[in-house]
Every structure is written in structure tokens, then in C-alpha cells.
Length: 58
Image (cartoon, rainbow, N blue to C red):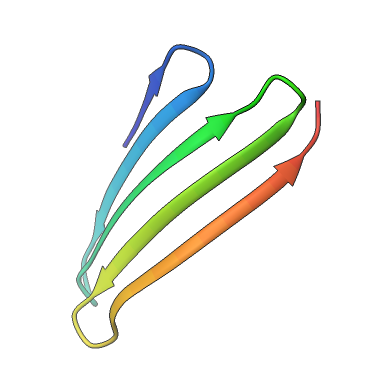
């Protein structure tokens, strides 16, 4: 699921089964073309796995 606030901010969430995982994240689009995403996934066996993504493009 992805919910877009304005044009520059998004909240994201997801769930999977077999194995069960829950993910939460957020994303930002800056005016200079930089996009940043931060997320965390909870896995029943591996625990919490954070991630960060930075990209550039127009």
C-alpha cells in the first residue's frame, strides 16, 4: 500500500505470508531530482532489516 502526501512525500506499508513479513517505509522527492526512501521490514526469523535508498533523476 502506498499513500502519497502532496507530490513530495509518501508513506508505504506491506504484509506478506510464508514467511510472514511486515514492512513500513517513507519516501521523499526533493526539488533537485533527488529521491530518498527509508524502510524497515520485520521477518519472523531474521528480525528487523532496515534499508535506505537514494537516487537521482528527473
